[in-house]
Length: 378
Ligand SMILES: [Zn+2]
Image (tube, rainbow, N blue to C red; front, top):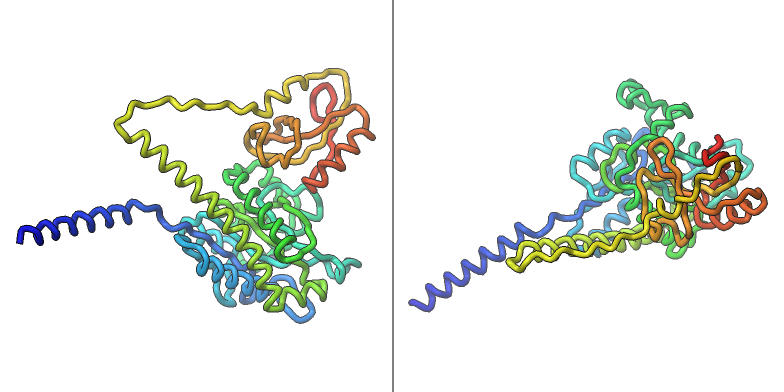
């Protein structure tokens, strides 16, 4: 009798402990998968297929891969069937479920009049930012143009006009809170598109996509390949092609999730140590040399010189940041609230052209800029 009451108490203590643990355990990681277009919005058109169907096919396969292989992850689709959704509704869904990561899936195309229409190929992955080339702007324009299907788009989208180049200036001054995570994830997806899915590499790029601007979490948009190229269209509409593309994104997701878990756990162990009764130990913070310190001697006057700009972010990165893909030393200058990162410096245009080639292989949107008296010449 005594024993069994002890047993019961032990059991209830155990239960309370276990329940407590489940309450304390972190909430599921929420990934929002956004199949671009749908319903009356077909997206880009191929010979035999529509963008909206390819996007949905890959989105559902990706969701299934995540559900079958990852624990503690909740998959939310903005659409899981052929229905029309506005860009704003897609962002609203992601924000409402408090997504931890947003993946928008699209298929690329180029203008009907373009001579390359049947030969252009390759996958690209995009994060939010100001486009650095007309080509990048065109992709954002095309993907944003679905806004025109709404009657009252100019009030709903705060005066943003998808086809007006001037409209895109808002992306220059936007706060990119999740830039670093988004770019890291985008780079991993892009790597997988090449290695897992055998795509031509069109790189990680930036442009002003409305749907990315309005989601408050790390967010990327992929352009799988070109629907206007019959060979790629065949690949993208095939079961095996879609599976490869989904697997590529899944591999990058899986890596992102385990990095995320590692950071969460690191955070937890710090909590435990500070909560314990042991005397507090001041943690030694090893100050990494920041890029600023490397850019100090940049006050030359009376000289014109050139640098290669390859990235713009709203904040300062440490000199050893992974974001620089091994480029060193990196410098920066500030402009319009952004830190604009550069590599190389020369008064000789031919010399900087060589540097530019090197940077361009890592950052395809890199370009040469000119400084006079320590100031950028526009
Ligand atoms: Zn699209």
